[in-house]
Picture 1 (spheres, helix red, strand yellow):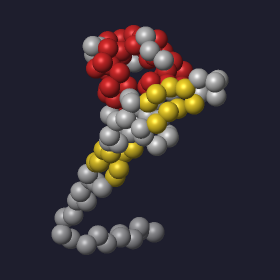
Picture 2 (picture 1 turned 135 degrees about the vertical axis):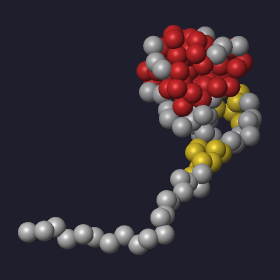
Picture 3 (picture 1 turned 45 degrees about the horizontal axis):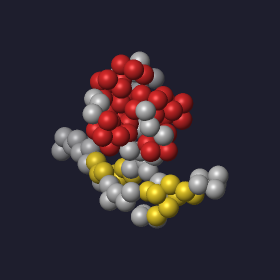
Length: 114
């Protein structure tokens, strides 16, 4: 079983804004499955796309990322300001490994004729 770590909060922010994946896909000019992959953390958007998503959702780009500090806590921006971070349970996604197909017969290599 493969574990997929949660890196972004795009789906949470979309839901809170009352927006749909399809609306974000149309805004960005990408396929809806691309946005779906971002929302499930299967793939991650580029930094440029993160900023465009933040513009679409009218939020700070930092709200789209899962903090790397222990939760709950305060995140220091380095600019003499602090952001209070709401605690969210760590979500770990798992995917099943693909089954190996077997025919029951052992494979033998054929020799090429000369």
